[in-house]
Amino acid sequence: MRLGKIRETAMQGVFFLTAITSIAAVVIICIFLFCNGIPAMAKIGFSEFLGGQKWSPTNVPPSFGIFDMIIGSIYVTAGALVIGVPVGILTAVFLARFCPASLYKVLKPATELLAGIPSIVYGFFGLMVIVPLIRQYFGGNGSSLLAASIVLGIMILPTIIGVSESAIRAVPESYYEGALALGATKERSVFKTILPASKSGVLAGVVLGIGRAIGETMAVVLIAGNQVQIPKSITDGVRTLTANIVLEMGYSTGLHREALIATGVVLFVFILLITLSMQAIKSRSENHG
Amino acid sequence: MDKFQIQSMNLHYGKFHALKNINLNMQKNKITAFIGPSGCGKSTLLKSLNRMNDLVEGCKITGSLKLDGEDIYGNMDVNVLRKRVGMVFQKANPFPMSVYDNIAFGPRTHGVKNKKQLDEIVEQTLKDAAIWDELKDRLKKSALGLSGGQQQRLCIARALAVKPEVLLMDEATSALDPISTGKIEELCMKLKNEYTIIMVTHNMQQALRVSDYTAFFLLGEMIEYNDTDTIFSSPKEQKTEEYITGRFG
Ligand SMILES: Nc1ncnc2c1ncn2[C@@H]1O[C@H](COP(=O)(O)OP(=O)(O)OP(=O)(O)O)[C@@H](O)[C@H]1O
Ligand SMILES: [Mg+2]
Image 1 (cartoon, rainbow over the protein chains, first blue to last red):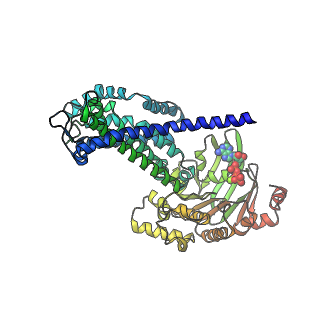
Image 2: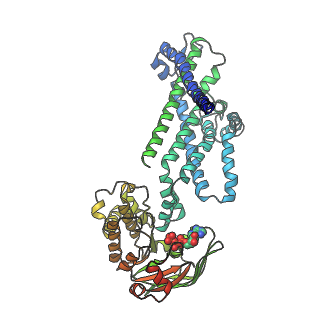
């Protein structure tokens, strides 16, 4: 009896510790980022840093303006959504409602495999296939906003497909039957009743996809061109916040290094906003039943 | 006049013989009730009339089912059939959209786009379903916020909005309180001037109150079919009598 009690308390302690680990990791990362990043931002000047369009960290005196890269990250993410969202949602609809069982057995694991491919491999694929194609058909040197958008669009597919498919499957069959019984075709029943009913789940998938796209680094560095500029066309090069960090971290020192950490802070704030909107979507869909 | 003619119909779910040699003609502008113990095949027969059974894998039907002399399982377009033969389900299933959009769904499906025309249809069908007064100020509100009884009458209105010829009702009042049930029964009796209604019910009183004809089913067979008064006052089959007097089922 007493031994059981001790075991129980011990187990509770273990659970507590494991739970604490992940929270501690988040807290420590926060502290690290903000302690290093915020003073750097203050030194550079907040508006200078966030709104400045000149990034020349090795000049004397140096300039640290990351505005172009903030825009770059947003453009690349938006581009990924333009490609990934329609394809992802339609694939999810197909998998959940139209796919014959035999095909499903192949397709479903294939979409899951897509999630397991390392991002550097996506980068290679972009470099060897997408970039040359863009160079050939659109001109320029190929490394561009378009290339990054296409590859990121593919990379966020498994997230959008997976989350959307389970949202679509969770919709009560009675909506579908109700629509059919009114004489609606299968397609209309699916797209006008089932898909709208699953919209908060689908939206959650899209938001997760945004998170994935904005944080992606390796694939983007290889194919985006990485020029510090606001691209004027989709075939122009672009540098994202993540690319900026990974390109210069190796040789940076002093304020330059701190400025890169501050870039990480900005990225972190983006992710925080995405997570918060995710929570908002969840609680809204719970309230709506 | 016969709206439906069913001849030597058999239905299998896989190996299970769910309906056995059904012969049944149902009249236009009348209310026909299907009664019988649970699992005897009432819903199955009802769903065969608008081919909702097509959704069930392994469901096989032989024999002939005709709507106005036209073979239901022949060349008829299934979506046209379902427009002509509307259905109200046991559990109210309004779409998760506004009251207005619920009613407008069917007409839009069949090509009505004009806003004024849709407005008229919505108002008229809600009036036909005797729920206009309750809902006229809530047309833009979500249908999921309505009470169970209101939802079911909304579903009836939604079915009426495509101007069907037949209304199939599968225990449409079984989840409702007596007042909502009474409203729907009244509604049925009013609607039969324009529609043919076929209802499944476990409520003997309801069948007696509302229907003109009653068919009694048992274990996949149709035991007896006659006008409702005869079935309930002097049934020919002993099994029918036992069922309606509550000795089994
Ligand atoms: N999709 C299905 N697949 C296999 N068997 C089914 C299916 N639907 C119904 N059945 C079987 O067919 C028989 C008739 O079912 P049905 O739903 O028509 O009964 P019912 O008379 O409507 O019963 P209840 O009064 O309980 O609604 C039952 O034995 C049932 O188990
Ligand atoms: Mg039933």
